[in-house]
Length: 220
Image (cartoon, rainbow, N blue to C red; front, side):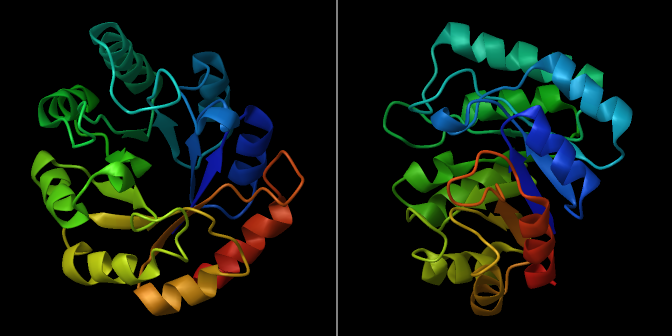
């Protein structure tokens, strides 16, 4: 399964028209992804059949949110849920960079059965084994991770361990520098079946159709 992270509508349309299995739709590449524009999302849902997962993140930076920001996240989930979102991507940590169980549980409840992915805030936590058990208990469908390292290639040993131990309970979605030139190696080494990439070529701004096709070929 290949998910393409799309930070604006041009990339989203490229990925949805290409061979990607689904997209993660967000805004602000420079901030690592924030909640996208609702009307752009509606345009994608009206014009394409493939699943659109929506990032729910009111700001860049740390994954610890004020009460006002948390209210924004709740309202966003309700709006995008009503608009037909196929999945949600979010992750709330506490002030100590550990998973905030209560707040994440509240968002999962609001998602009302729509699959939820815990994003790479997971890699900020101190103990990935303990954290993934918490995500499983909370009911997350997937976790996006580079194995606690800056890139998936650097974190591949940990990714293999997570796939071996937990992939029957939660989808391990490998992201972080995943490109066509390394996806086959990552798949062979980790045994993973789920991959996440922006498919943006070096010195470019938008997802590249050729790179998406090469990624998909490498993941198969």
